[in-house]
Length: 177
Image (tube, rainbow, N blue to C red; front, side, top):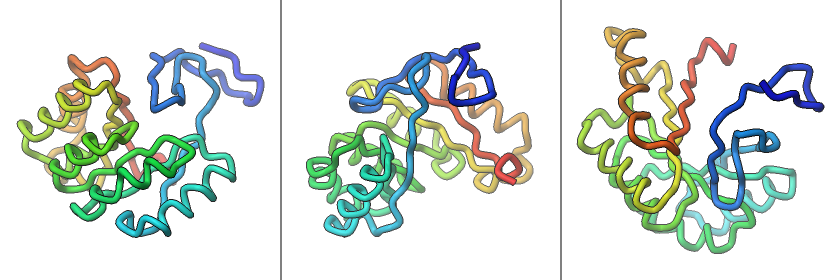
């Protein structure tokens, strides 16, 4: 455990991961992340929001990339951004591959929405090739009810294997309540 002078809670020692120029974990300062609410393909609105978030203290900003037009906008958004950009991938693994090619600093992937193991592995290999981390965000609602806890744990374990820069975080609605 690491003591954190800004908190009464001790921090668990974790592996350090680089997201662009920002370090996460491993005793690095806590990183503030937010997400834009603009359609990512609207470059001007997205960059304006990224700049406002950075000015407010965000260290990294996540943008949604549900469509090809969104990933097509990423190079310009990244070029204008003062902070690393993270691509939040929804249902199409191709968007992850396009975002990686565009130069994002990290991918957020939900394997509950991208169910084909070969497609998920392709994203993992692409991230590994360019040296960017993946945050595996498994939302409770994206995992079919019959795929209870055991399956969620299996998915988490399979994705973490053999890729040391994976960031594992289960986003379970109950924890947010």
